Length: 299
Image 1 (cartoon, rainbow, N blue to C red):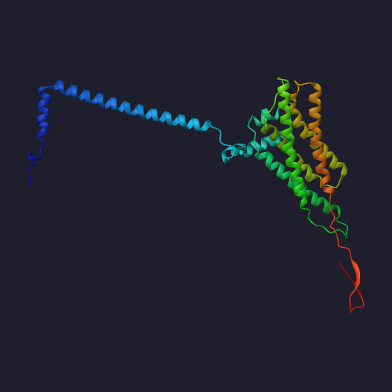
Image 2 (cartoon, rainbow, N blue to C red; image 1 turned 60 degrees about the vertical axis):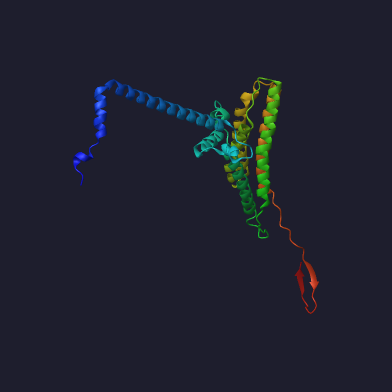
């Protein structure tokens, strides 16, 4: 086994002798190596910072680029809304306040299609189901009445409501764009904001249709007038700030047409339960079969 003295590193002794003879040289060398390491580390950090800045620039540039119309991300932004926002917008459509504009105070230039889509779908199904129930209740005591579900009312209600919720805002948006070109003082909302306003304004028709099951004609008409008044007030308070700078004739005619179409939709919903298609029955013919003395009724 080797002795401890033989395992000593003699190079350290030689380096110590050189350091004792020329201490300045060792210091200069150490400083030079330190500066080299510092400069190398600085260059590395600058290079990393530059790469990070480039990555951030590319990332920000990718966020600014709008998604394509045919991608899922483009349409996802229209449904980016939480339950609290939807409930607040429904509450504002049920209780309109004259000092609050629905677009500025509720939508805040962030319209959504989630609420209008499901409001229209719920209204269509509620109207179809209520219509079938109303037909059944009206003929409950008639023994000759044969009930059959009228599924065609779902299609009729859905087509009518969705056409109203899309075609009327489209025509209104085009008219406001035209008036804005004629008079610079006339304002205009975006197409999605107008669709969103019309969609949420239809929510009050859902409980009204359900309450129409009460077989009291006066109460039904009172609820219908109340629903049209509150829903029409939302439209008037929303679009009046845009039209008050236009001529009085144009403003009055446009607002009247908007409320009239809204009332016409309510009348259509009111008259749908009374439209029932009777079930056709095949006529019976009296014939005498061979071998039988009695007559039998066959179709």
